[in-house]
Structure formats: C-alpha cells, structure tokens
Length: 443
Ligand code: C2O
Ligand code: CU
Ligand code: CU
Image 1 (cartoon, protein in one colour):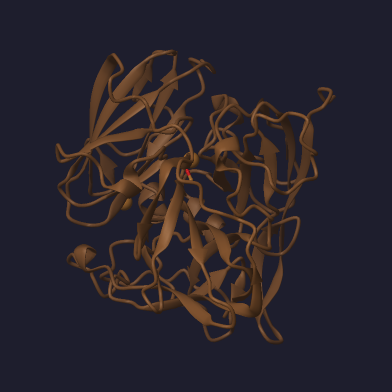
Image 2 (cartoon, rainbow, N blue to C red; image 1 turned 45 degrees about the horizontal axis):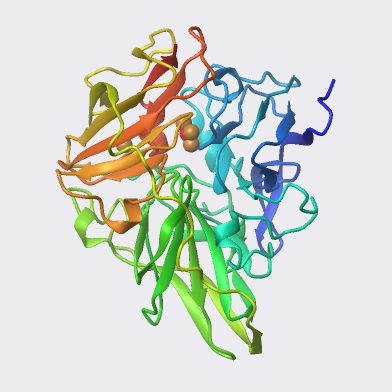
C-alpha cells in the first residue's frame, strides 16, 4: 500500500539490445528500456516509493548514490533483488537539491552490471514553494531561481561513459594487462548515444554531468578553452558559482556547470589529458587521451531568460562542529586499512546525531577515489590546506590524488540500524569489486 501523496516509480531491470551503431545490435541491460534508465525526480520532503523489478536471469540491485536514506533502502550489497523478484524501497527525501544517480551494487559484480547499462539519474529538487506545480520542470533552491532549469532544453543531463566494442559490436570488458583501473573504452557515450550533439536554443545552458564510467577519469573542457561556471557538486549547489576552464570528474562524481553560448557557433565539450595523474600506468589508464564528448550547436538566435545568480546556497557548515570521532583510511592494493571487504564484517559504528572527521589517503600511487553512503561530506582540508573551489561544496565522492591527506567531515542523522550497514569504498568499480570497500552502521 502507498502512503498518500507519495511519488511512485516502477523500474523494470531488463536485458535487451541497443543499436549504438547503425544496424548493429549490442547486447545491453537497461531500466524500463534496453540501455540506461529514466531520470527519477522528486522534491525534498516528498515520500518516494519505488518498485524495482528484476527481469534478469541473475541477482542484481539498484543503489541510490548520494541519497540520505535508511540503510535497508540503500540498494547496496545487502539488498540484492532475486531474478523475477520486486524490491520496494521507500523513504522521505531529506536533502537539498542535487543531481544523484543510481546503479547496481551487488558485491563482486558492480563493475559488470553497471557496464552493461544499469544507470540513471535521480534529481532532487528543493523549493520553498510547496504549492509549485508538480509537473513544472523548473524546481530548484529558491536562491538559485534563475539558473537554467527547463529539463532537456537548457538543463541537460549528461551521463558520460566510455565503452570498448569488440569486432561483433559487443561491449568488451577486457582489462588492459598493465592498466590499474579496469576496463577503459575508447568510444564515448553520452546518455547512451555515440557521437552526440545538442541543439542549443538558449544563451545559458546548465549541464548535469555524471561520470558514469567504471574507471575513466575525465578532465572536461571546451574545444576553444572557454570558461564555464561550476554551480553544483555531488550533494548540491555551491555557495557561489566558480569559473574555470577545466574540471576533473572521477567515476561516480557529478557536477553541474553553466555555459554561455554565442548565436550560430558550435563548440565541442572534450576531455583533455590529465598530466597530474600520469602515474605508472598513464597511457593504459587513459590519462593521456583527448576525447570528444559532445558537440553543442547554437541556433542563429538564442533566448536569454536565465541568469547566473551570484549566490546559490549556504556553504557547508561542518568546519567548526564538535567532532565525536576521527578515523583514518588508507587505500592501497585493493584494500582499505589492509582489509578487504567482507559481507559479514562491520568495520565500525557511528553515533547518530554526531559529526565525524575521516582522514583518507591514497597510499599506492594509482588512482582511487572515496565514496561514502548515506551522507554528503565537507572536504575540510587537503594536505592541511583549504580545499580548491571545486571541493568547496557537499560531496559524496572525492578523487584522491596520491599521498595527499583529505580530511572529510560528515554528520550522521537519523536512520539508525544496528544490523544493516552502509558502504564506503573506492568508486573505480573494479577496485570496489576486488575488495576496496568497507561497511559501517549508524547506531
Ligand atoms: Cu555509487 Cu557504493 O556506490
Ligand atoms: Cu553510493
Ligand atoms: Cu581505487
């Protein structure tokens, strides 16, 4: 039975075929379709009820990445959905406007299941105006009113994925022998489309970028090096827009950027080499690649309704908070603190209502990032210094430059459950599957 006023979503996980290339079928998985899944959208304060039906021949799951919710609804390795079964998670949305996403999270098979196509966005809206029309596409934090917000027109979701196709046009999950990250593809899909372009009709456009790749690191920028404004990170709006011409996103991270276009001009969103991540495996891990991501073709005349507000949201506020516990995490050799993920081992418990500081270090020179379930965290310092602007807002996943010390502050609120854990892990999916993951409970 449904709660009155709940937002209900039916999601069917299925196997299918997708013609990424003309007339050639690739075997894929999708949600309510053959590849990727629908954008789910709900507002802060709303109750959501999802029915996740597994139409595959094996167990899988859907995890709501970035969501604050009870552990039993999280869709992680402890909530597998059997073939033919339907799982019905439900919770009340209680966090600011943000671009979240969903993907499978069965232990040992997250990389494979995600690669086949089980990915979608989960957008949260946050408006002080509760009387706003549910069907309106422009719903956002009120101070950010004015940001481009017409979905698919000037507010464009972009799920960016690399894929490698074999001779029969099937996805290959072949891992380069000397690579350190897992599969790296040489073809780029945006929202499941090869060679994508966007017809631009407005001067300002918001892009909701998701690095939906298993392993690849992107260093986004435009072909003419134009500047753009970063307006939101994983957990929501930044305090102020930050202007830049390059933006790194590691697997699982999101960014919202606002770009200005000129009438009649075309420009390409690309990914550029990331010199600072060369490492031992630079070329095989794709750090030297320059990739075309998406072309933007501006119309001869552009409408000009949106604006970029000077102030977007409150800045994260955990810097001065009383800290109940400090923990440290060292990532190296498929392990965290020397331990490999075990389904029946809970690494620690945190106290509901408290703030903790986690110090995280990438200790082996390869690329790792760090993701925590249930919370959004504030990056307090990187190697003792204030974080760079792109790490100044709420985050749930952070790229770990080797040997730097990241101090992350997070507040655990409600949803206690001594029996069902949340995960923390590297979001390079092969690393996660190989055991670079641990579990905690909120008590
Ligand atoms: Cu995006 Cu534990 O996951
Ligand atoms: Cu997650
Ligand atoms: Cu890793």
